[in-house]
Length: 124
Image (cartoon, rainbow, N blue to C red; front, side, top):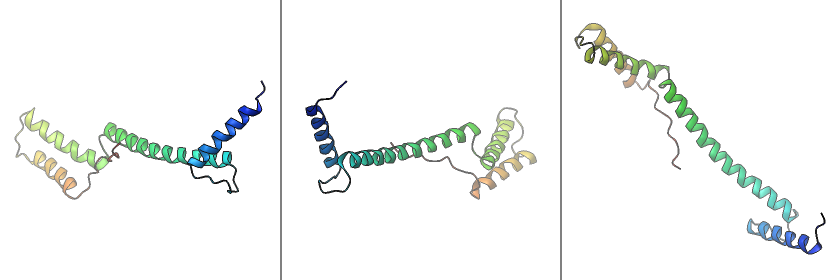
């Protein structure tokens, strides 16, 4: 399939105008196609980097939710859950030593900042 001279000139003009829109000047060492190609790759890389960072944050949040947090957070939440379940479902006395101990240990972990908070995603 042959390409006519007019078509090649039209394509060249389009590439020049696209390169100029991205900051290319006639006296640049780099040709318009090379300049345009490089700029498009740079822009695509910046966009991809932002998307990848957002995706990584989402994956971390999903894994955080699936695990229920990290080990320390799991411990505090689990201790509080067990204490609440024993009192509210099994009707154990709230002041019994092992229930108070569970709540005190959970509070200790929470109060001293040993519980990790979920990673915040950037707003889209």
